[in-house]
Every structure is written in C-alpha cells, then in structure tokens.
Length: 383
Image (cartoon, rainbow, N blue to C red; front, top):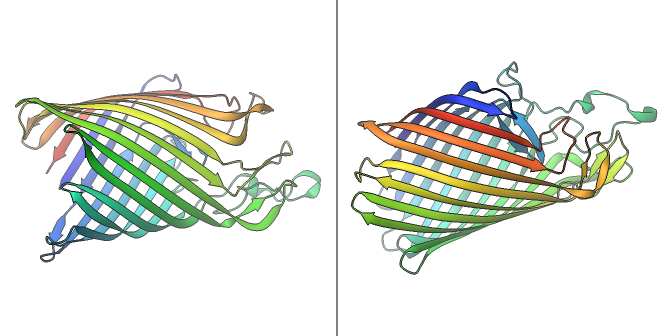
C-alpha cells in the first residue's frame, strides 16, 4: 500500500496576513507473508508541514514555522487460524526536524528529535473483527541540539550558578516504558465502542530535580503520563450510493512529574510544576457518496481540549505570578473533501481553523493564545 498527498494554499497565524504554504505526506507499507502463521509488515513515512503550528514540547508551547519527519517501522505478526491469539513484536525509528524561524537551517533546531521504540502487542480476538489488546514498549528519545540559552551563561545572581530545571545540554533526553490496554466491541446492532488505557513512564537521565532553594538534588526527573480514551462509532448505509460513519471520542490525560519549577529571575519556586489534567472531546462524521471503489468523501470534525496545570501559576503581561493555576483551552474545526478524478488520483480540499486561549498573559518565550487558519488544495495518489 502507498499514499502520497501534496497540498498547497493559504495559511495565517495570529492575525498575520495569509501566506502561501503547503504540506506533503508520503507513506509506503509493503507486506510479506513468511508462512502459514507469520507475516511481516513494514512501513516508511516522510512528511513536511509548512503551515505554522504551536507544538507542545514537554509542557512548553513552542511555535513551529516548518516541520519535517521521517519514520521507519517493521512489525512481525503471528496469527494461527486455529488460535484466537495474535502476537505482534516490532520496532520503529523516527527523526523529527522543527524550525522555529524561517531562516533556521534544517538539522539545527533546538527541538529536533530522535526516537527509538521496540516492543510487542498481544491480541485476543473476542468476536471477529473485535479484540482485546495488551502492549508493552520501550523507547528512547533524544534532542541532540537542545541547549537552553540560560545554560550558556556561567553565573547568575551573587555569583551563584543558574539553577533551573531546564538549564543545560540534552536535558530533554529521556527513556522509558509504555504499557497499553485496549479493546473494541459492538454495542447493540449499530454502535461500536473503542476504549484504550495507557501508562507511560519516562526517566530523564541528565535532568536533576530542582528544590525550593533553586539548587539541584541528586534525584533524577521521572514522569508518569496516564491516558484514557473512549470512542463510539456508528456506521450507517443509507443506500447503495450513500454511507456515513459518525463518531464521538472522549479522552482524559494525567501527568504526574517528579520535577519542580524554579524561576531564577523572580526567585519563585513551584512544586509539581509540570503536573496537569487534560480533557478532550472530538465529534466527527465521514460521508461516502457514489461508487464503493471510488467514492466522493467528506470528513468533518470539531475538537475541544482543555488542560489545567495543578501547581503552575499563570502570569500577567509583565511576568508577575497571580493566584490562579494556568489553564489553556483549544478549539479546532476541520473539513476535507476528497473526490476521485482519474484512476488512483484524487483531488483534495481542506480547511482547518484552530483557536487557543489561556489565562497566561506572559508570552515572551512560549505561545498560549493564538488563532490559525489553513485553506489548502491538492492531490492524493493511492496504490
């Protein structure tokens, strides 16, 4: 299987005049049967995103002018026709490049990432095609270019070393383990329910915990991210030429971090600086009209996401801390039309609107409130 998508159009961010931009995405996924029970599934993906977005890099809302990503993965699948069990060991490697400014060179971004993953999934079929799945993965992420600006200064107040949790080189590098549980099942005759629970434990081997004196303890930072997702899907065939799939997805995430926060410029210490609770909901609908093999497809979705930090205080425009915890809210609206034109080639038109707000008014380094609009058109080739 292979898919190539190329889109171009107008993009605006934070009220700026619309500028020409575009996105390109290519996926290639060959499959090889090794015998009666074993198969090998490989995939390669390359993507470029020229539309400006705000990227969450471990709790820091960072604007990205351009992004590029390459990912390769391979997974073996054991599936015996006489057994309800399927085993899927696999590994993947991803390289991500992020440019914060247009004149920044590729490969020199502060938040460029390398990510290794290796693990396995066990699946038990309950009632075809529904199943229960459990997975265990180990990962290692590195940011080879990360060096905070503060870490480049040798001394701070009264000759003391700067003592903030993100001061230094490669302090975002981490490794850890992810445990996942999920299932899907029919509910009645028309509704399908999907549910997933995951727990991600991360260790930062070069990031020490900062204390209330602005100094570093010997302990290393450790985080636990727990995520829970529920989705209800309702397919409907109205007639031979019209089919719909409605869905609504609910989710919640909880981050518990061993790291604290210390603002050296204001002498402010906040325990549990990165802890947060997040909720989201995404209703969506897909409409397929026309031929079963080459239908016209309309996708529309609306998303709401709200993140509240438990101990991180919001600041006013001058950086003075208030008495309320920082809260961010994001709304997204997306609509895409895909219509076949010849053979495996289709035309695509997509419009996306995102709006974020926050009680954080201090945005000298990071973005918490913004609006962006994309209106893109292009082609998609499927094989």
